[in-house]
Image 1 (tube, rainbow, N blue to C red):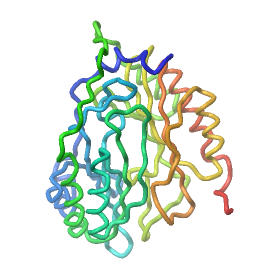
Image 2 (cartoon, rainbow, N blue to C red; image 1 turned 60 degrees about the vertical axis):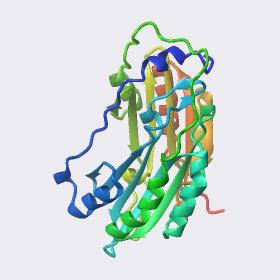
Image 3 (tube, helix red, strand yellow; image 1 turned 180 degrees about the vertical axis):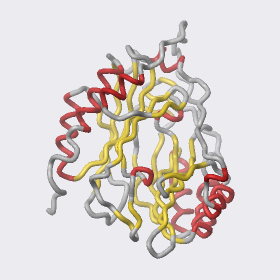
Image 4 (cartoon, rainbow, N blue to C red; image 1 turned 135 degrees about the vertical axis):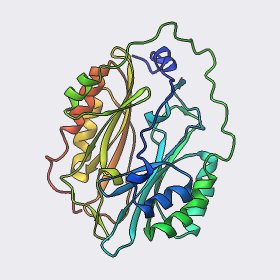
Length: 308
């Protein structure tokens, strides 16, 4: 299948996306203050506050096809308590090219570390970049210092991304058989609008920052987002790997026809070193889920990270 064959499917799937948000009383008071200061929504679970920073203001196409925001354009920051009583903050901000350096300067000026900058897609218009941020401090200080950077996101008008000549779908496509996808992968997912996302934590890896465990909600996870129909679907996602797992995962993805679009880190100074890999592909939903599962099967069986 060419990368343009799924245009009618995704074009028809641009439906209103609803985001599940915990009510205010579910969020501890100091974390609620963070949401109020930033003017964002979020939820509290597994001792982690997750703040949602989706790029609903940008209409992104991938390979000329309009793509739902939950497919891979939902930025976030997360906080969890360290053993010294302060907070560990990690996040992934989704940025237009022109936003990258102003946001980076605002983060650095307020004491945050920028630990990674990279792409998640090929053929995306406008070009989108992902910036990982890391910080320590009290909830109030982190929120106050983060706000200038967050306020820079989405302030400029994004370029037009209308795909010329893209045919309109004439029928409503059948939904994905999400139960089948969950069965293939072995993990249930969550539906957000037109996107079904399966997230798998790396509980076998013990990564901590200032005594705080870095778990799936803090970004240590492997995931796959599906959209389209059973016959014509698209997948995008991220795989969290030890160094020894990188080549086996690459082989599994390529053997199953999935494109690798980035290999990089998200954190600095962590032990063991965690490498993250972004992939994308199109085909039948079952085929895509099978390819993702093949990569997941390589995790946790290739020994410890390299000490070279």
